[in-house]
Image: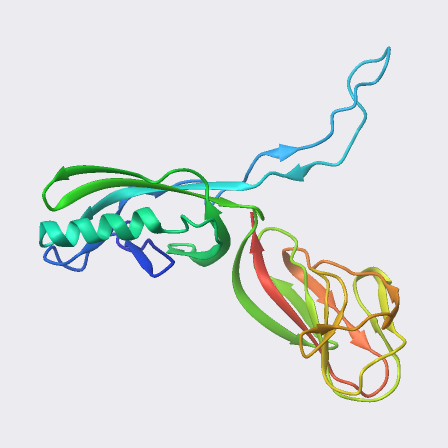
Length: 250
């Protein structure tokens, strides 16, 4: 397990175990990646029932994910260690986001993160130091492989949390309707002639990355739940349709 796990972000790779002990390495603790593979806390508005037991039943939403990563860094020279410390201290220090990718026994997953708190580095000797860097993911979901399913075929999400599909629509002419899960539909009344996308995550129709205003007359998006039987979508007319699904986890 330890040899398999590694993480990459911002040009830095954290190894589960170094390939040799004579290079410059960021090495993870045996439990050096916390809070990435499991769930997160749930938040909800708690409205108490006046003069009654309990609260009103309100929907819960997932909180952001906090991911501490700990281990040690080692270098062949004191100068090398100083350079490694500077690299890690500067990682995401300007507040910008980056993609954290982690590989382990459960496969490869990723999420977009920012720095959560000051990076901690404790030097042990001239060529070795301990580190703790903590990341914050506004979106608590983590993501895996991307798969594409043609119209009429069941789109399957191999994660454990509902996935939000993206519809890839081929070139053609005239309006059309896409029918998806439980009879939900998306009707495009002002359809571009060229190939375009309908993104359920951000909401809207995009042509060459540009949102098309007033293109959709009826908008009833759907999710792809984890596991079988999946979700089948079809499109009216002669255009092609593909559901692009990213395996989604919590």
